[in-house]
Image (cartoon, rainbow, N blue to C red; front, top):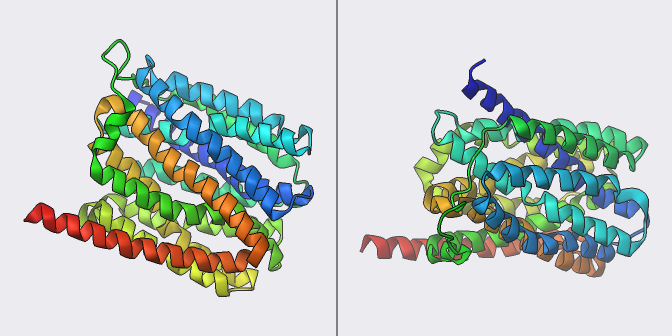
Length: 385
């Protein structure tokens, strides 16, 4: 096996296990919290704490990656910290203990994907590999683990923490097989992270990303609970997440062609429209078996924003700030958005119910698409004038 093929397989397995861990934690921790007696407002507050910590952690780890001798060392620290945090998660059901552990886990975990994207995209720029192919391994890993973890959680919800620990430690081992990617500010002039915000198009895309991801933040926090409220169990929830994950594959197969044809702005506007339609349909559906096919729409939302923003940053941001760019995008799209989605969504859910909040999310997303569609159109006309 030549070196390039070894690295390709390393990336594929790394992404598969990275998203397996996300499937376990993101899907079943809200169910775990509900099972041990927490209400929706408390769950929303707890789930929002992690992203709040992430807002502090993301720029720290991004700058560390850009200034480290290799970005890989920072990635390995993040993996090890995540593994230690998750294995001690179920030692107490106390609110303050859970809040501390969620914050600790998120401090390490939320920068793993952005830093991995920075390493991967930078390396494959020198090859003929497609990021979509590698990222698809994460989709398949998420899908498989959603079903497996659902079966395990149905028997023993506490077992998800041991499972997640094992997956993260396997990924820690795989991380040593990835190519070394240097930090371009190591032994070089330091570039301020604020330089990122001089790119006005990037700022607009990040704001639009924040709005749509906020609706997704509510979905990730409360869909598992809502799904159980309308009659689904943990095993069926696993299948629901399996479908949503597998639905990403068609986009990933044609992602480069889609972005080349439509451009980043129009691709994200189309994706935001799908999100608005999806939340509207979830508002009207009361049967878990009808929800299952609706999960296919997920493949036109999260992965589109994730892929399009990651590739845009890799192309448009100076190499000295690529890790910082990816983590700042993660801060906005996966940090602040999850806070807003969890806290506001949790409070609204206690007042009007989860079902009604999906309607509000739909209206919010439709409004954002119309507003940013107008902004992007005006900017395009000014550039052509």
